[in-house]
Every structure is written in structure tokens, then in C-alpha cells.
Image (cartoon, rainbow, N blue to C red; front, side, top):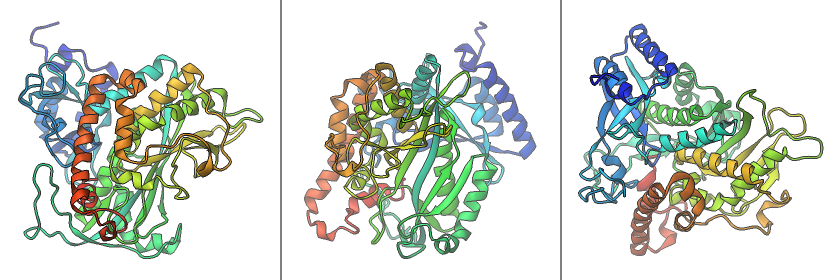
Length: 497
């Protein structure tokens, strides 16, 4: 190879299909008059970071990549610096990361998407690489791709459907000029907001119509971006919305979840609203939001759904083993499905969220809800444990890893539960601290995601937990909490997620 070859060619990072997609993205730039391309990557929290590149800079990035600091990986959810950047390895146990060096963003041109709500602007997802051309090992998109590749090596594909709940509020006062702007480890004051609806009226059409003016631009943008939107639903609590999408395969589902969150938050903010995927905001009368992740396993060659049960079965044998893997690894996977302190407020009996490691047929109390039946080609399972603030890439990677392990080891899920909230099975972790302890001691995810990543994520989450514990120690009166939620949680997560 020529010594003058640029980064992507030098390290062989584009497949022929990606090279074709790169050319198509340049054609789309001309077709739509695009002037700026937001090149983004999901961080450890599932937040999208990156840069807005000019057309010329994006064109260059399609051959040379685009360098960016890896500094955000030092941060917890409030930008507290968890590791010391100025040790030889930056605290990551990865040689060469001392001093917060640059990594290279390599666009995934197949994800190039014109943004309907921003003039002359598009977005493209990127993967992160070290200077030697190896994948940056802490990048969640890299971790999901490794698990999908492992699944493909056994001739399987992941099919996912997204069903996510979120809260829509109206901004009354942004408080700028009057509030704390925050500091590393101390979030800024969130805006003052009001609910957009009142009353607990599940699936009430009048409630949905009441907020339609706020939803229309979101709906139009999602469809214009080509996302397979299925529905907007009036959820259980005031100002709570559920959005569902048709099934997607592999990485496309995680990217779609990220695009969806980005669209909802940015469009809402531009129109005077604040949309939040925080589980339970500290707003009186609000209720916990969840992310119900629907998955099935398909034959990689034929596309056949391999979970369809036969007569007298809840799921096929492969499907049952897939569920067995989810239950076997559900406790340590909690850090990936429910990564915030606040998310564990869902985990209580009779709350429509699971509190223990159960599976059941069409029962919303179970962690793994079986949907479908004999001969139903849409048969699949729904994991009801996740919160909407979960990192899409790590949530899905954990499902792939656990499910494939169950399939390969023929793990039994045990009997179906008739009453999941009273089943005599292990409980799910009740707090983020319990979940982090479980992950730290877990050999399975260390093997699948690597010791370096697990130790890193444990350190990041323990920093977050320690700040929460310190706040609670100073404010122990639970009766002063709004909606049972601490002010610390609201500041930490409401505007961020």
C-alpha cells in the first residue's frame, strides 16, 4: 500500500459497501445543499458527542478520518473527572492514553442522514480508532459491533423493536442569568418547567390530541429521516409519552434509538419544550418511564425468525435458551439496562416494572415477557427492565452477549411464572450500587466486554454513586424529596437525558 495512503485506506477500515455509501453521502450533500455535517459518536453514557464539519472537512474525513480528543471518556454523568489524564495510561490501563490524546473519528457513511429541523445540516455516526488503526476499546458502538459480529459468526442476527417512554414539559423559565451554571461534578440548574397535561389517563386520545402540536414536528422529522415510526401513545402519567418503532436489525436499531432521542430533545428545545428520557423526574405527579426492548434472533442466511414456538411451547428451544441467558446474566447486565441512580425507582412490586429475574407469557410484571405463540412469525421477547436513559449500544450489546451465551450453553430459563411479583427466584439489583457490585464481580461480562472496559465503567459509575451518597447524607429528610426523587437526581439527569 502507498505510503501516502490516508488513515481509512491505510488501515483498511471501509468495506466496499461503505465506500459506495461514502460516495452516496457526497451526492446527498449536493442534492440537499448540505453545508455542515455533524459527525457524532455515542459516549459511555449514550450521549452523542462530536463536531460539526464543513462540507470540505467531511469530504476529507471520508479518507483521513477526523481527529478529536478522547477527553469525554474521563467524565462521569456530571463531567466529574474520574481518572487522572496525566498518568502514563490516563488511568485506563490502555497504553498511550496519558495526556488525553486524540482519537480518530471514522464516519460510517451508511448512517448519513439529513436533519429536517436544521437548515443545510446532516448527521453521520462515527466509530473511534486509536492512532494505530485499532478500534478504541471503550467506545460503546465498538462493543456492540463486536457482539453482533460474534452473533453473526454463529449465523444469527439480532432483530430489535424499540418502545420507549419519555416526558414532555413546557419551559417556563430557562433561568439563564439567574441560575448556577454548574462545574465539573456539579450539574447546572435545570430550567423551570411545567407539565403539558394533567391526570392519569392511559391511552386517552384527548390527552394525545392536547399535545399534538408539540408532537407533529417530531413525527414529521422521524419519518423524513427514514426511521420506521409506528406510534405515539398517551402513556400512564401526565406529560408522559410512549413512542414505538417497527423492527430493525443489528446496529441500525441502536443508531435509530440515538437518532430518536436526539430528534425529540432538539426539536422540543427549539419550540420551547424540554423533553426528558430521565426515568422519574422530581416533578409532582410524574411516573417512571421505561424502555421496553423487543428482540428476536433470526437466521442470518434466510431471515427466518428462530424463536417461533411449536405446539405447546412458549418459545422455540432456541428462544427459551435465549431467555435463559438473559435471566442468568440479568443482575450484572443491570448496569447496562438501568445505568442511573434514578432508574432503580422503577424496580418495585406491582409497578409494571420487574423486580426479579422472571419470564412469563404476555405478562407485564415479568422481566422477559413472551409475545406470540405457535406459528406466529412475529414471536419474540420483550425485556421490560430497561430505563429510557439507557445507552442503546450497551443495552443491546448486553442482550446479544447474554442471549447468545444462553443459546450456546443451552441455559434453561426455568418454568414460566404465573405471578412474577411473588416468584421465588433471585431479585434484580435494587440500586445502582448493587448492580455495579454485581458487574464488578461478574466473570461473564468481563470475558465478553473485557476487563479494561468493565473496570472503567465500574469506576465511572462509582464516582456518580459517591456524589449521590454524599448529597443524601447532607439531605437525609426523604419527605422533602419531590415525587420521592431527590433534587440531586433531577439536577443530574433531567436535562442531560
